[in-house]
Image 1 (cartoon, rainbow, N blue to C red):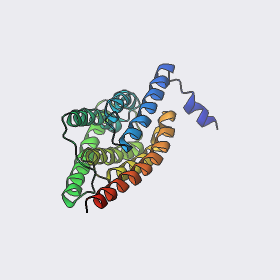
Image 2: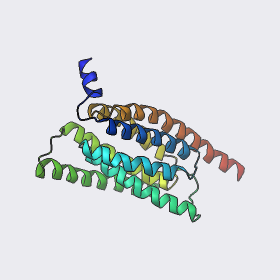
Image 3: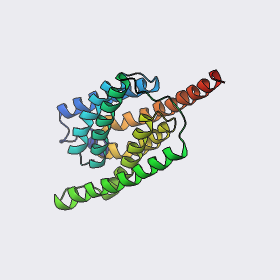
Image 4: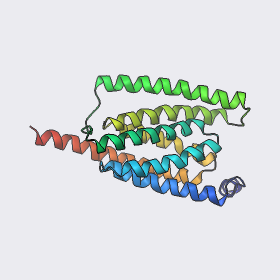
Length: 210
């Protein structure tokens, strides 16, 4: 019980950081809801959330997640630009080439994230837990893959979100970002719902074009 109190009332958690975390969590929920409905507002709202989380994850030594959020910001800007210029992909299931590119992205992302952690932990003598570092590297690869698949409007992107969100829950609780820990629990449910919605849309589209 005392451990939970320490997490909530950590001296490193200023009211400003709590406000930022609450704002980012709220924006994340709305961006996922808009993503479920394939609404363009997912991009500007998502950008606001990822920019805040880029800062929060960096100061809590979650460098992999910091990279993820910077990547999300860039991909959201690209997606927003593409949507406005009518370069929109239809929702579909992944093909063999999509799995190949996704696997390649996952492996390269994990390697790059490992190098980033080595730099911060060894060169800057950062105090960090190696087991959370390993999980963060893994989730970085998962989320990069999910973001790539979502940019291509693939149904399987939601599976990556489900797995990554589940793994992220304990990481954020242990890092003191409690609101974000609860956010990821909720995001798991939204990702499951998103998978069901997108899968139905693909089957409905095929049925209407027979």
